Image 1 (cartoon, rainbow, N blue to C red):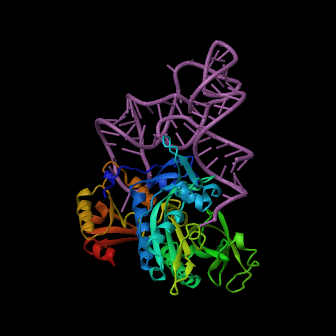
Image 2 (cartoon, chains in turn green, purple; image 1 turned 180 degrees about the horizontal axis):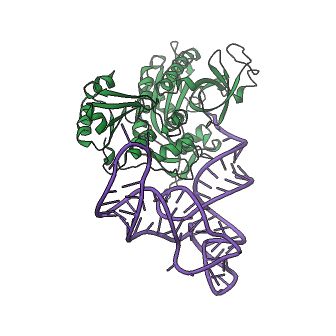
Length: 412
RNA sequence: CGGAGCGUGGCCUAGUUGGCUAAGGCGCAUCGUUUGGGACGAUGAGAUCCCGGGUUCGAGUCCCGGCGCUCCGACCA
């Protein structure tokens, strides 16, 4: 991608109606654009990051047997009446068609769609378990959208639903999902600051598990056990008598954190309202046991920015960076162009700053702000040596290497 | 939903004891000079001063009502 062709551009000063770090950096760098409180457009650079995160999640959920589908946002009121959420769920968007007067919900989650769906196909113990998920647009009428893209009213979410013949089968899959989540956050670059956290479990199980990433931008308080590398959400701290439920450790460290993922045992809470039972080996009718597993994509992206950034801008890990390489030409477009083509041929993702009327300083500042992992500079100075300057965004070390060796160096 | 703050060209700000043609910076356009850390000069375009009502000879500025945005709190299957 050539920077001269990118329709967005960076801005020096963040709009004053954004104070969170994630929104300021993402807006300044041209990754997102705000439409209204809690609603953002993903721009080319931001959408590339989004898609990479999406793909990581897809791969990990597929690896535990998830089958990807796509369910609608527009949902009939009747389904929500059955689960009593039409009247009880505060952040459910409800609206009435102007001409038919029919009422609808905009889906904040999809138990009401997925339970009747799976019921149609899986009525025997032979058909179970079933694992289905989608990555889809959610609407939540948040009383207070906040913290940039961390808590929006419209956002993409990966929601996985599992259907089981009994608790044991759910428990086994729940553990698999937990490990898949660990891998997802690891691959997104926030593994070391993300903790499996005990949270309230609703009526079916004692606890659910949240994945909480430590950051000052977080709105939750968690208590970390350094021995077990797990944490306890403030809401259940009293239930566990202020100690680690795994090892009994009472030396817990309080931190602010943001919930990037959540896994939850639902039991028959959403199968029962839809009269979803299966027939077991003996021909007896048994309740279908469910689990659900969610990750908010924009929130995850925003959390990465909060966690991995400095005063100059964002610092993306290679796994989700918009581009692996940011190539700057300092008045050497002829040579840089060749290099750009070579890199693309080698299937290295490269953002090429080919802008001619832009000063060196501005190009450096933009590269730091956008935060691609590797910065390459082509200048008269480097070309004299048949070389190129290589600098990683997360390091101050500047290396000069021969042009011939560049591709090898980058594909290591 | 309670509390606080803010609302002036695309972005950041000044202007608020009411008073002339709403000022500056960034960005944008044209020209020239620059080019390794957000260059400089000149010229130019671009504004329902959030909206509605009111007070006044006169309102960006004062009053009333609304809307929007941010932050704190409450809430968050």
